[in-house]
Length: 269
Figure 1 (cartoon, one colour):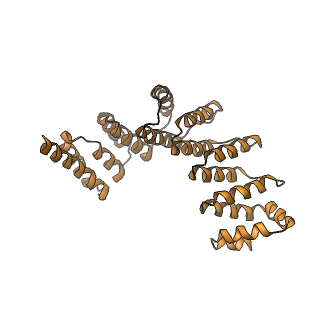
Figure 2 (cartoon, helix red, strand yellow; figure 1 turned 90 degrees about the vertical axis):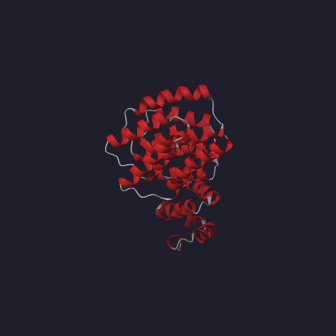
Figure 3 (cartoon, one colour; figure 1 turned 180 degrees about the vertical axis):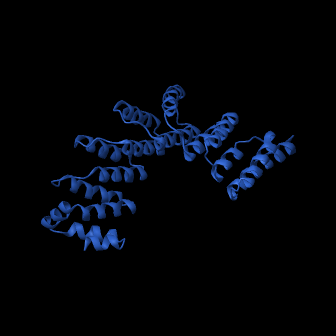
């Protein structure tokens, strides 16, 4: 019955049924694992974090206990809800149960801390990952750079700590080959930091490495052009169209914003 409700995407009814089951039947479902996994996954997808946590604690008391996938899904659900205290509790419980966190678990925690503007905790989890010999991958660095940039723009950042860690992870990044997503994140970061020259360098490097910029990459770079470089922004926009990359409302607005700023400056001047 519970599996049936889960298959019908009615996890609320499935959970209600699970709660009313006699302990013996609950134990059987827990041992089967598949039914519990379906229900837990459904609760995560519906963002029923409280119900998922209660079910998870029930699974903790079972003979086999939760798998690493279950741990990671619950951590991700807590992070989405901004409940980093519970996310850390589950993370620590996983380690205490003898299941070492992998790069996915660490990256989920990292993303969660950036989401709630907790930079110190994000730096701490990154250092712990390195200390325990877990090598960050491209997704980790993408989450790191994008998250740090957003927190920095909000003003939640310690300058000296930022520079020290940036030197470290930029050194580590040299061991990786960035993909299109990471290049785009880096380009966007440098544009928003008023470092157009380095953003253009990364854009050209990306093309030299055989990666084809998409609309998002072009838009990020166009948006980074100041009014005095409107002609360059227009050339870049035309190059995008010639390359067969489809324009969208964001790329059009990015170019128009540069042009409108020129008009505004001329009017105020």
